[in-house]
Length: 149
Image (tube, rainbow, N blue to C red):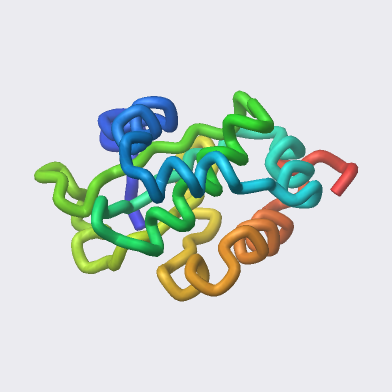
């Protein structure tokens, strides 16, 4: 799924997205109440090389409201500068072609050169998002992750 740096950078970063959505009661509660597992925090803090993440979201999507605060909290709690997450709204006029037929939430992880590492679709995200995320991150190239995983 092709993404490039210019397209990626045009989208909202974590703080801008949180600021925009924190007035949503359910989003705010999920963000505040989510307690990341030690394993998820460990995997997120172990990423040694650039990882770019695009998140397809929709405001009225219950699965988005349940899951997007999870990945944003993980990023902010860990503070790993190698992870850059951008959120694009399903309704965005600048939606890249490869996302047009996807259902929110849809998340794609890329390396620093925008080669796809993996993606998570609505099913992966709905069932147990944190576990799916940790599982997929553990599979990526070991030189991107620290040795303590």
